Length: 305
Image (cartoon, rainbow, N blue to C red):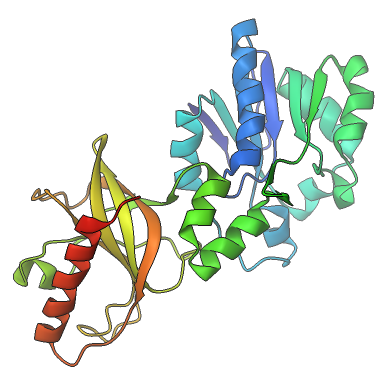
């Protein structure tokens, strides 16, 4: 997948099918857009995602900056979804003030050679968010592209949105988050060296330090899965600060993998949080912690997704 980032000066030499949006969470509504542009590859178009960096809400101080999906995670998920080109368009006060008609003509039609656009019914773009799918429908015949407006996807009578997913993650409702996302909630990163306590206790673990911008569920232990080198392992994961063994307030994600003994420091892994098991807590001793870990591992082994 080709990634174009940190520049407003680009030109694509291929005709494209384009999906526009923030794509935070890449939920089942977003996946409908991706299906549409992927389908157009059969007609010789490149599947292209156009998104903004940072999101407009972050630029204008309307968001705390926490993301369901980091840029690095989006790169992996978009590539797996069959996206050929990802454009992370710089969002600045100047670019945000672009008239929607200018955006459609100069960026979509001219620079991106868009021939097809998949637009969510709630799409907004351009100065003051005044551009929408209806405007693109009107401009399309003149600018050489066709627009398909995709209605909001609903689950159990409620519209699926990034806000809905965010609420589930913040409450630790990982099962509902999975339904909304179409996949378990992911945390991707590189394995870092921890304090080796798990290994010394006989339960070796792998540690990630998620980006500060990554939205994590409440601190605690979760039933999980971990993907490493294409293989998926059953696991249990702790989100939090490990209060029994350290006073440092560094948010981490520590996972115990079943049937896994490899040393993988510095390697990328993907952790998928399936279901909340128990809250994080401070134990009176390391031995008490060991006893709880034994219970956690036994519960994880019996967990049925």
